[in-house]
Length: 227
Image 1 (tube, one colour):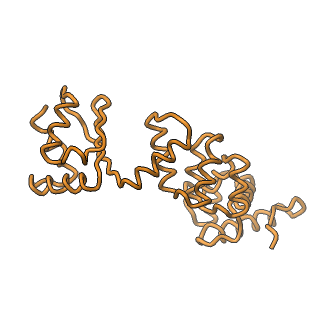
Image 2 (image 1 turned 90 degrees about the vertical axis):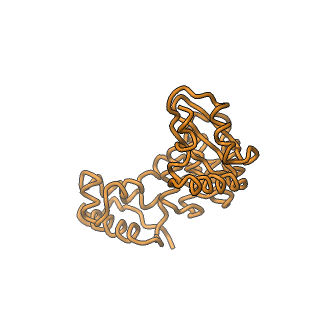
Image 3 (image 1 turned 120 degrees about the horizontal axis):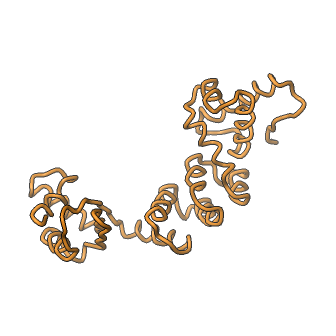
């Protein structure tokens, strides 16, 4: 079955009606009749006819923010768009997150996603690592994310109040969490980041119960006497 494409010979109203019909059928169902690359073309046409994403969104009963996500396909490199064109990839969420990566990294991540070596959550994790300033080849970041999943790492961020050394903070945590279950402890100014194994996370939960505080408050309770 061939893809439907905007026709340059149709009357303007006919083009608009067809584009809106395509968008309705493609945005109100999880099973889309067309690949995202084709939907993006119809969306571009509809926006050109009506003047804005908001106007198109109002006509098809969708929020402008959600509708804009379909246009992210145009921010992807050619090889990645090809994966969407052939429906090896077909997730709006995946397209949105892939578009946040530099063009040179998109294909590596997209092919890993298409082969099911990673999922969309892993792409989010890679983007977060980049936003935190992590450098290096994209394959290294993918491996780090994959290894983290295999280890079942649990990350808790907290605020450091006052001037407290890393040694003192770790000593406080070790009162409740076995040292070998503390996989990492990072301090960046007033922001702290604690990385725990599954057993370490369970130990932290036990500490919260023993201290009669919610889990979200247990770290501040553990560090309370250090400030």
